[in-house]
Image (cartoon, rainbow, N blue to C red; front, side, top):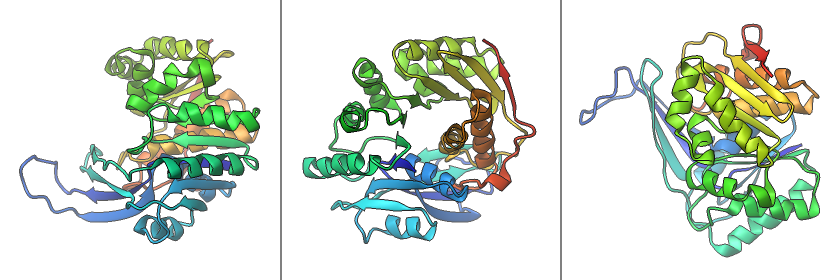
Length: 321
């Protein structure tokens, strides 16, 4: 069973625009959808659609609309009650696939609730094959909370592999704690990798888009040298890179008509973990990750793909070192 923790879940509201977004004007979307989202929740959703055991842990009151949406989607979950409502993240998607997101702050997590979450993670981790901690951190928790959680979990489950997918201050704090508690796997995009190693993330992504992956590989190797076993870097239309102490693998994605990029990275992480749990080679794991992420971009809103929607045949991986 893969346990996911989403400290800052969201109701993902997606508005599909029929024309290009223009500031200051009134727009009427052609469609509107709402789903239970958040990085860890999306990972559990993808795993569940593939008939893999997973459980999503998140803070939300039992009567929150978010919980109803999670139940409606068939996502297995364990909710920790909080007094404030789950935030709403609004996505505006243009006809060419351009995605604009406006994310809410999230519910305040008070120290007693934080302790309950920590105790619950440790308890549920006893039956887990992986722990995935993903997304932004909500108000009320320290930026280094992911490092604290890794340390706490490993005190009782030292062999449990841990994956982390986050950004901004939480990503920087995670990097500062590598010497104390490095996760087994991280899944940054180019911008987040840049935050982690204090490099220009835009440069990393631009170079990859030109076909030059060396800046991304060099940055990822810094992270590996600091104790992270596996660095899975998602790079949009450029594909993805997997860097470990054993080597470097690059993947190019299959063709797709992009509808929305929301949830693509989470789907990639889910695909990688599925292949990893099945004993797949690094190339297999990377191919599954890219096929899942690409399939997600071809679906509207925060729609998580199923295995039947993957295009593995046109997902190409090469081992370069």
